[in-house]
Image (cartoon, rainbow, N blue to C red; front, side):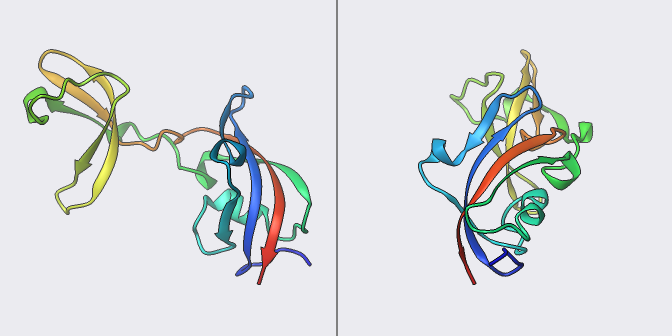
Length: 143
C-alpha cells in the first residue's frame, strides 16, 4: 500500500549537508520520525517525498532551501545594545537566546557576534539557506 496524504507514518532517516556531514538522524534520537503526511508537520520537501513510497522502501532525496527552512535572510540579523540582555548572562558567539517579538511570539536567536557595546543576533533557522539531503525508509504506515 503506497503512502498517501492523511496517512500517519514512521520513517528512519539520516539528514546530511552537501559535504556529507550528518546534521540529524532518527538513530541519533533513538526513535523514528512520526508524522501525518500532508499535514505540514515536517518540512515540505520531506512531506511530498514520502507520497507514493511503500512500506520498507528506501529513497535518497535532495531538498532545496525553498522546500526546507527557506533562504537565508540577512534582514533577520539584528544588532541590539548589550545592556538589553538579562543581568548576569555573559553573551558568547554561538549561544542561543529566546527573544520575544512585540506581538509576544518567542523565537530562538543565535548570537552571531559580541562586542563591548552590542550583540549581533541571527533569527534565521540554523538550516536556512542550506540544501538538505535525506536517506529515508518507510518503517510504518497507518491510515
